Image 1 (cartoon, rainbow, N blue to C red):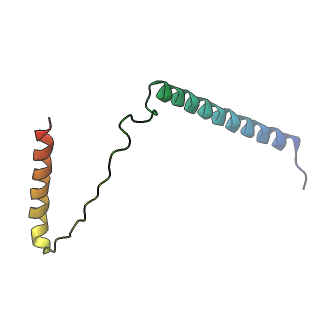
Image 2 (cartoon, rainbow, N blue to C red; image 1 turned 180 degrees about the vertical axis):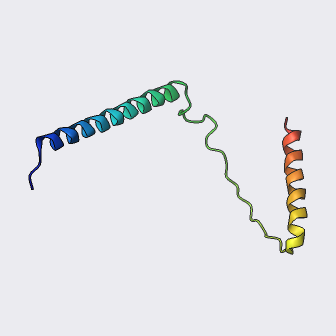
Length: 86
């Protein structure tokens, strides 16, 4: 297999272009990390981690015709709770 000089040059150009793009992405990620770190977003929370108390959810057995009404009712409850906190 004979590799031509032109082919080798084109491969070098492709790899050079890919390397430049990769380097630009790495530099951009570094700048973003510096901004986020200096803003304090990665600091430890002074109150500690929030508690994750999960409750057991009991599924309801409903016929398909009643699912829409049940979903709408739950949606209204969630929206009412959100509005209460505004």
